[in-house]
Length: 429
Image (cartoon, rainbow, N blue to C red; front, side):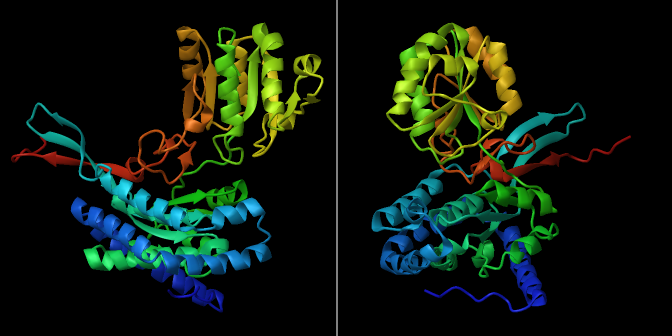
């Protein structure tokens, strides 16, 4: 396994390096776009085999990252996410095999119509082209992102965090070896070898070579990419997700959904950060949920009515209702109606994931229609907004945008379409 490449010494060298990577990705993308589905399946399966065969080598590379982690100021939890064990490497291999089994999205006729003049108009799925994927330290994302992008017929440029550079390099080398062995263009998967942050800006100024940028990480990273990119960006900034407990809700069900949405894993974008409760059930439900959240050391910051009913609640500020806490804090508000809940979510939310717990079909329909989010959950946890849980096989991230892709982005969301028109000599008069 090779070690991390040194950053180019001068800005001109960095620009030249980045242009070369992008140029090679563009060339590879034209080959991947037309390569058979069988080649991509062979590549994914061979890559999975190599990960298993080279498990010890990957662990050695990962040890270099773990040794450097304290110097980067990583917390114990972040170091654990960075760590690769044989079981975690096996999980990465299994994920590649699962992606291999997903239906190939390229060349699929999405729609077809025959015009009165005899022309047949086919709407056909095609790859996006070159994906520039910028992400933070988890090394399993390196393999997942590469697999999803190539399965969708794209080439990918991976720019991972410096914390996982040795692990990511080891994984990408195996992906490239599998490509050479199976006939896939090696440059279909490239890892940016420099940790110089300026490289990101260089790539974001190359719309002629890169078709889409996808950032995955903290809000500051995503906002930087959105501000600087000269190509489209698939993204979400944050995840202020809500659970609304309606007047007709089964309160035991509501308690379980709120606890799971908030506590099953607090530091992720689809964890609940805000709880809304209909005034008719607030007096009964608030003590129930306060006890359950208290057992998990979750602090409640509430409005006036919440603080009246719960001695342990702290007054919530305006900023609390818009916050993504990513930890053991939740904002709570008692609302007079379903409409008030919808208005609150659309005002303070991040259009990510919002849930209603209700016993009324009409209420669930009104909530689903009124809440402007990428996913609406009816009597289910917000934690289900995930590509794997939705049956997409895998995802490269979640989008809260409305153009091109929204919600979990799997292989289908990394495609576009074009029209293919079939005639037999028609000319326009």
